[in-house]
Image 1 (cartoon, rainbow, N blue to C red):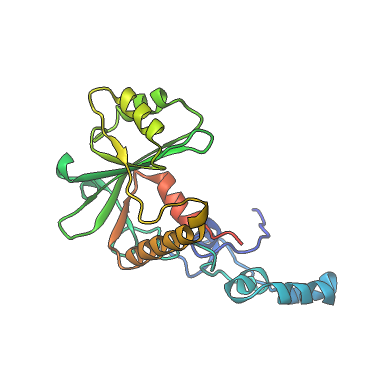
Image 2: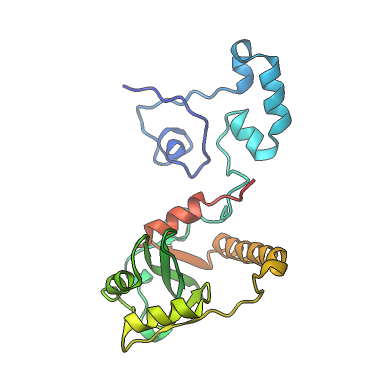
Length: 239
């Protein structure tokens, strides 16, 4: 037997799946006891409770003060459902594999201290965008990244890169050898100092569009992309 005391972390968190009676995966021998901050008023004091009420609103208040499991308002991809299609956005098996390499798209974000990441995708016969394969690793040299990616299917497909740094692109193409596949990503909005705000607005529109596509099941993610799935589940807007 064991006891866990914690603040809820949303309906996508493992504590909801394991302990909440509305969850299909709820453990049969477990019991969830819910309590609010107000229930502990004698120990916390009026000043603390007033501060919590005045600094938390909406879903954040429901979660932090009322102790409710909610889809936290700061989550960037709240439309992503971590369940198999058609109920959610996950797919596996042959449905997550492209028919041929000519229909595969690839995008990459350079990195060293921050991980270098690459995602392969394709559009299936139903018009859904399938994120089918991922690569993500940090603190490695370009030749090490390329050596690992060369062992993966569809390494040789054309890839759009961000940031579109000519030196980084040239270095990746040099290490790729005969398969010079890395190219400059076109930018709708340049992200120079004078364009920072426009860039943020563009980024928010892209997040909103992807969120909508998740909600309508127009974007599905292969179970072979665990790091990408974790990103969709945990990425939150900064305060």
